[in-house]
Length: 477
Ligand SMILES: Nc1ncnc2c1ncn2[C@@H]1O[C@H](COP(=O)(O)OP(=O)(O)OP(=O)(O)O)[C@@H](O)[C@H]1O
Ligand SMILES: [Mg+2]
Image 1 (cartoon, protein in one colour):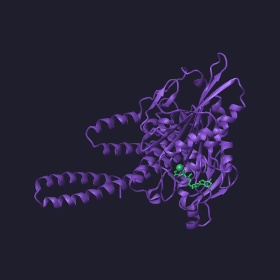
Image 2 (cartoon, protein in one colour):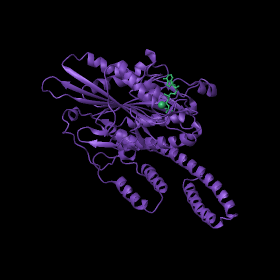
Image 3 (cartoon, protein in one colour):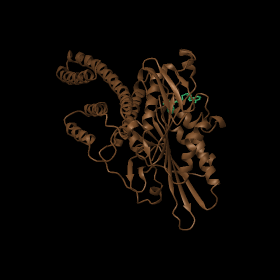
Image 4 (cartoon, protein in one colour):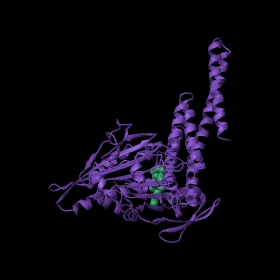
C-alpha cells in the first residue's frame, strides 16, 4: 500500500497582488520537496511534499511528475485520479486546462491536453496486438447537482454503485476519442458549457467542480480478456472567503454550495486518516455528491494525485496555509489500486458501511425532520458534522498520524466549517432584513381596509423573523 501523491504548486504573483502588496512572498524554497511558509498571525511552518512546483515551474513539469505515471497505469487497467485543490484564483484551472484548450502554445498546455497526448502516444507505441478504445465523459457538480457537459438536458445525473464498475454516473454521455485533435475539439465543446463567473478574486472563476472521466478499454487478440482503466481529472471550485470575493446573489449561493462540498471533502479525508482502521470507521462519502463520486479515488482503489494550488502572496497566507494543511493530511491516505478488479468484473468486493455515530445522527435527523422546517434540519445536520469533527478527534492510526495529524485535520475541517457557517449567517442576516422590509409593507396594509388578512400576514412573518433571529443568535454575533 502506498500513499497518494501530493504536490504543491505556487503560481506567480498576480498583478493585483503586486499592486496592493508589492513583490514580497510568504514562502521560501528549501529544495524541490520542502519550503517554509510565513503567516503573520500563525507563525512559520515547514512543509514537505512529493514535489513542490514554484512560481517559475512549467506546465510540462507538473504533467511529467504528477500525471504521466498515472496515465501509463490507466492504460494498463489501473484506475487513476488527479485532483487540483486550493483557494479561488490559485491556479487549479490553469494547471488543468492551460490558457485555452484549443489555442494554446505548447509551453502553456495544461494537464488535460497532455493527458490526451499521453494516451495516444501509448497507443501508438503499443503495437497491433492490443486495440484500445478511449471514451470521455465530462460533468460538473453545480449547486449540488451533477450536470452532463456533453448533454445539458441531463442536468441531474444520478450516482450509482455497481459491482462491476464501482461508482458510476448513470446515463452519462461517453464520447469516443479517435485522435488528439478531435479529442480537444470535444473537450472544448464541453468546457463551453461549464458554469464560470467573475469574482473579485478571479475573472474566470469556476463556479462548479468539473470532472473529466476517461475510460480506457483494451481489447486483446484471441481469448485474452482485456483490461479496463478509468482516469478522472477533477478541477475543483476554490474555497472562498466572502469578504474577499464579494459574492452576492447567485454567486453567494454558489459559494455556499462550493464551501459545503469542500467541507465534506475535508471530513472524508479526516475520517480516512484520523480514525481507527477497519469497519468501525464510517467514512461520510454520502455527505456530498463530490465525495460520493470520488469514493473509489479516496477510498484506495485508484492511484491518486493531489495538486495543491496556492498563491505565494502574504495577503493570502492564511488560505495557503489551510490548503497546505489539507494536502499534508491527504498525504496520509493509503491507496492500493486493484488491477484484478478491473480484469474480473465480478470479483470486486464492496465494503458495506457499518452502523456508526454518523448513522445514528442521520436517524435522529430523520425523526426531527417531520417536526422542523427543512432549513432548520439542514442547519442541525451541518452543526452535528462540525461538532463531530471538533469533539471526536479519533485515536490515531499509527505513530506519524497521531496528535499532530488529528490537530491539522481538525483545523482544516473547522476552517471549512467556519467559512460555511459564516456564509450561512450572512444569508440569515440578509433574509432577516428582507423580512423586516416585508413586515413594514404588511403593516401599512393593516392600516388600510384589508386589516384582518394583513394582520395574519404580519403574525406569520413575525414568527418567521423570530425563528431567523434565534438561528442568528445560535451562531453568535
Ligand atoms: N502557474 C501559473 N502561471 C501563470 N498564470 C497563472 C498560473 N496559475 C494561475 N494563473 C493565472 O491566475 C488566474 C487564476 O487562475 P485559475 O483560474 O486557474 O484559478 P482557480 O484556482 O481555478 O480559481 P477558481 O477556484 O476561482 O476557479 C488566471 O488568470 C490564470 O491564468
Ligand atoms: Mg477554476
